[in-house]
Length: 76
Length: 517
Image 1 (cartoon, rainbow over the protein chains, first blue to last red):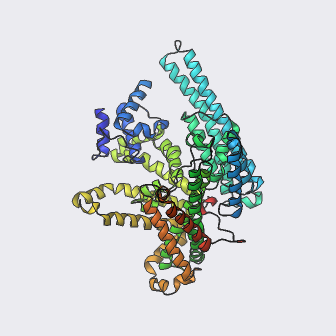
Image 2: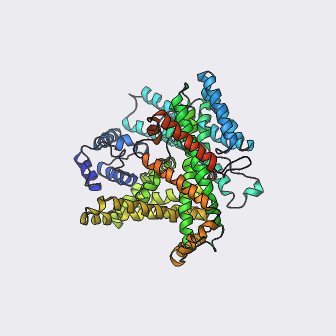
C-alpha cells in the first residue's frame, strides 16, 4: 500500500489519497493520470492491468486500486 | 423523419397513446416496430445495413459468450487435473479465439461504415449508387461498444435478437445519439412502464425546450453563418469573429436541442437516456470542454480506443524501452501522446471524410497536449500568486479563453479547404473592419434587426436556464413551483416557439447538423 500511495502522491501531491473515495467521480484523476498510473503500477508490481479493469470502481480510491493489484498478483 | 417536423410529432403522439394502451409486456416490441417505421422514412434501402450490423453483432456476441461458458465449465471440470500454468494457457487460448471473432465483426461493421462514409471522398459513391444510411455512425458505435463489452466480460450477451435489434435501432437516439451502453439502457428499455404523468410532463417540456433551441435559435443563426461562409473573400476579419460566435451558439442550440428532443421522447415512454452535455461553454480548459461536450462519444473513444492503445502491452513495452534510451519524461508521455493522436485523428475522421475534419481533430489534440505540458507553469503561477487563481475574474478569463479557442478550432468545420480557414484566421488580426460590422454589416447577413432582438432574448433565456441548471435540473426547479408559475413557464416557451420559431407548412427545418456525421 505504501508503494502505491507514493506513486499516487507523486502524481497529485495535493490530494489526500488515504481517505478520498471519489478519485474518478470527482474527476481528480483524469485519463492521462490513469495511463501514467497503470504504467507505474505495472512496473512496480510486475503485473498487467487489463483494459477491462479500468473502470471507476477500481480507481475511485487507493484502497480499491490496491485491492485490484492484490487480485491481479493472485491471478498471475 | 426529421425530429423538427410535423410527421415526427404525429408519429410520437400515436406511439405514446398505443404504448400505454397495449399490454405492458408488448411495449418493447411496439418500440422495435416504431423504430423500424421511423427508420423506413429515411429509405427502405438502408435497412440492409442496420440488419447486417444487428445480426452480426448478435451472433458474434453469443458465440463469444458460449466460449466463455465453455471455458468456465471445462476449468471447473478439470480443476484437479490442470496446473496453474495449464489453466493460464487455456484461458489465453480461449481469449485469442474470442478476439478473432471480435476483430472479424469489428472489421465488417467499421468496414461498412468506412466504405459508405469515405466513398464520397474517393468519388466512387455516385458511380456505385452508395448513400450514407441514416444514423450509421451512431448505431455502429453503439453496437460495437456492446460487442467489446461482451468480449471483455463486462456483461452477458443478449440472447433475444429482437431485443438487441431494439437496442441498436431505438429511434430517439438513432440520428445523433446519445450513444448508449447496453447494460445501462436495458434497465429501462425492456422494462414494463405504467403511465406516469411526471414522465409525460417532463418529457414534453424537454421536447419543447429542444424545439425552442432548434427552431428559434439554431435555424435563425443558420442564415447568418451560411452567408458568412458562402463568401470567404468578402467576409473576413470581424465577420469571421462574428461567424465563430454565431456558429458556436448555432451548433450548441442545434445539437443540444436535438438531444433534448431525443431524451424527452424517450422519457415520454418511461425510458432514460444518458445526458450528452454538461454546460460545455463554461469549461475552463479544452480537455474539460471535451469531457462536457458530446459526452457519450468522448467516453466511447476513451473506453474503446484510448485505454486499449495506451495501456496495451505493446505500448507499455515501448515505454519501458524509451525509458532506457530517452529518459523518464519521454517514457511517461509516449503512451499518452500516441493514443491521443490516434484518438483525435479517428474523431476527426468520424466527423467527415475531408481533410478539414482531420486537421480539426489534430488541432484539438495539439492544444490538449500543450495545455498538459503547461501544467507545471500554471502551478508555478498559482504558487507565486495564490490569490489570483481563486478569483472569479480568473475563472471568467479561463472560460472566455476556452470558448474562443474552441471557436477558432471549430471554424475548420465550416470551410472544406483547410487553407481557407487559416487564411481567415490571419484576417482576424490583419483586416480591421469591426466598425463596418456594427454599421450595417450585421444587417447584410440574412437577419433583420427584429431577428437579432429575438435571438438576444432567446439566447439570454438559454443562458439563464443553463446557469440555473448548474446544481439541479431546471425542470425539477420549475416543477417545485406553484402550478400557475409552472404552466405560465411552459406556455411562455410554447408561445415563443409559435411566434418566433422558423417553421410553418411548407417550411423544411434544417437537418440537424450532427445527423450528417
